[in-house]
Length: 181
Image 1 (tube, one colour):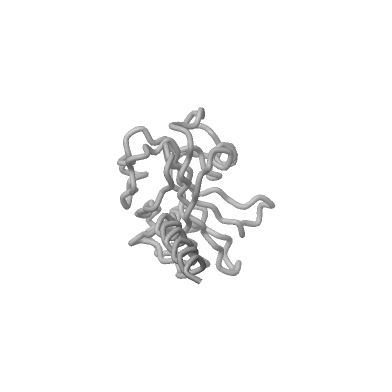
Image 2 (cartoon, one colour):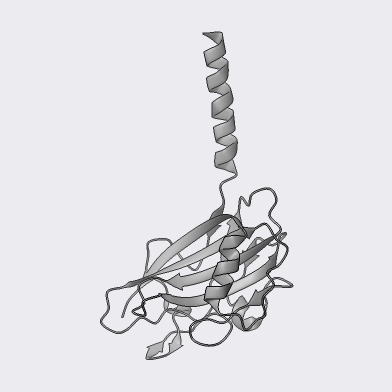
């Protein structure tokens, strides 16, 4: 009986340690399950938002993390392949935040690179679903990577960034918001 109690106690400690190490992503600008604010909506293509990149704060990266990447994606876009709104890679391992407006203000963590979005340019491109569509889902995900950097230029399309990110991922955390018009 004593062995079983000790084993259960050890398992709960290991489980608690694993739970504490779970990667998390939060934002003062985005609330999971809620509608995106006009500040993060695109300004163009018929949308009139402010196109400000959101704050993203992460914690709980696994041991061995050498860099981070952030990607924003709309799986509901009527393209057959979704729509990439943002890709940032080569974020140093000691970073844990991207400030509100960092994309436009060029205040990303030192060394970070923004790839091209499906808007055809680098930098953040906010939500802008077709008028009349049901609200789209926007997934903001931070990835902990096992490499110091991805061998990609700032002209890399987000799908290519996504390929390298997933091939080198240790863990990830997401916030999903909606937006419709």
